[in-house]
Length: 200
Image (cartoon, rainbow, N blue to C red; front, side, top):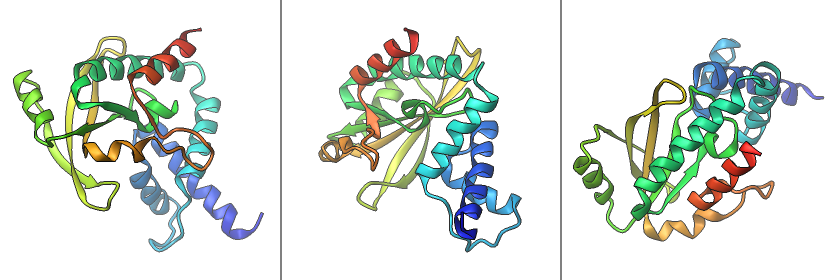
């Protein structure tokens, strides 16, 4: 293994620990890993696929007895919110979809709306408190993210649900598989299938 790939692996392993133990998202976890390892900011970072492999390894090694139940609880909660938000064509993505989530992970739902404000109006009507932030969307433009705290009975605590508001026209591109042929997100039907597999 050359020096570059072993360094990349070390960064990924350190970032994976931060993802699992502190619930960090991949981007911030990689940046923190550089600090933890005392590496310069310009150091080349591992890709998300490499980091995800390390997260899976870490979970198998240290969390095998707790993680499957926590993941199932988060997926059940995600399904509940996808039912509530059905009119906005919700898709689940991130760690809860990919199967690497723990109780510290956020639930990431992407909503494909004709009108970007309609989801906010629905939350207001349900008297749900939320915060508005933004991230870079699939076309490189900023998109709104509505963040709320949803109680999870199974875990006995609140879970952060992040709703990314995307344009209805983006839904077609959303279903393209990743480099390994795995889907990056799934609708409620696909999630129910995963829940069925989890419980069998």
